[in-house]
Length: 234
Image 1: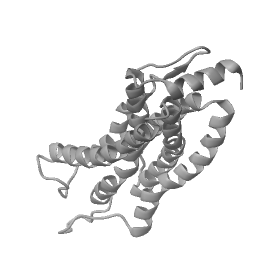
Image 2: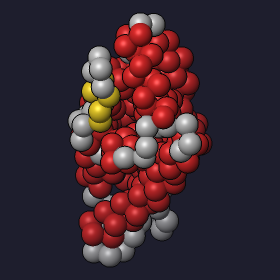
Image 3: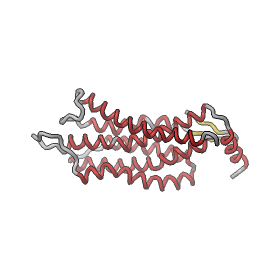
Image 4: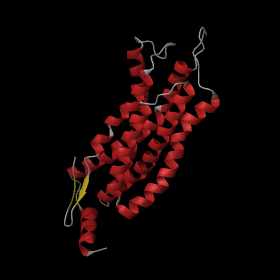
């Protein structure tokens, strides 16, 4: 590591809390927000999928996904997250965390769109396509999750590093809450106020999947590192 790089790190460690610190919290925190939204919105999506594709004609109660199908839809993203953490953690050390952070965000956007556009001739076909894109969404989340916290720790000074990292992790709770609010709001609007009504139009669960793409664009602004100074751009 050269003297200039050591100088930058030393300057960050001793810097007073400034506006760019809070910008870094927002940028890294929105990554956590998006991650948790994408992971937890699937619990609502599975309920909708059961009512749309697995309700028997003339049945008195809404349908639900078979247990094996439900388990697959709910866990496939977590499998991708596990693999993504290993891969992007290694790649981030090789090519630079900030560069790879942008790659993970792009992957998440593309996979979210793919999840919302999961079509098939049969219900099983729709589920297979959805699981394919959910895996790659989880793969991107696996890279975004650790990189967000690492980037924040690099920008924080010694005195406030713990508090700033905790603030970034706090966005995860807002993401979980956001998934529930968006899910209920979209369902209520699309069904005339009757949440989880038996006959829910197909597009409703697609809106939930695609809605998350609005979050990463704020992150993609990004973190620029110069030779003599470090700044965060929003």
